[in-house]
Image (cartoon, rainbow, N blue to C red; front, side, top):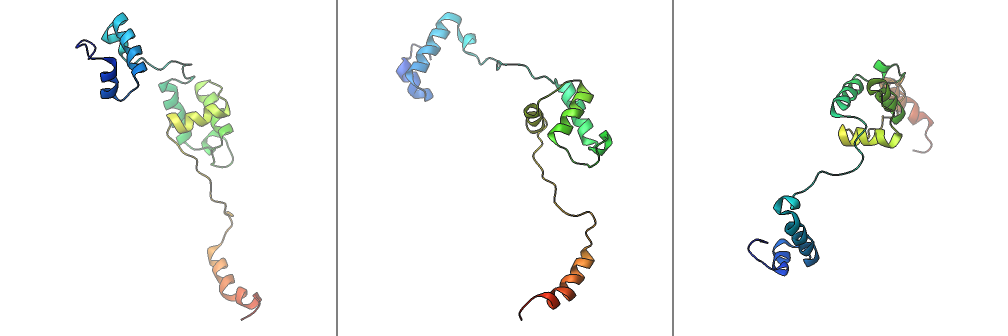
Length: 139
């Protein structure tokens, strides 16, 4: 559209942006051509773990917490951080561990069901059927 001489206002209406954006784009286009308008890679600090290390961490986590010497097969941010340090040699903060789990690994928060390991369903059913009616007040 710039090459065709279309006005900034017409381009803004056609693209659905404000005219100031089009003026900025035109200045960039005039200085560097169409290639200067291309999207650039996001800047910022590179991740501490590369894709290979993330794959190694994923494989280690999929083995379960007990395979890494933890008593219960339950992952916490601290435990995952310890496994990341052992596996990849990188120390991550709790926030970075959370971003690793939810962002790069695609995992979500799962809370364990709070139940006693010794729970006996048949004994509970017997108690409800026989003891509870005897104990409860009223008809």
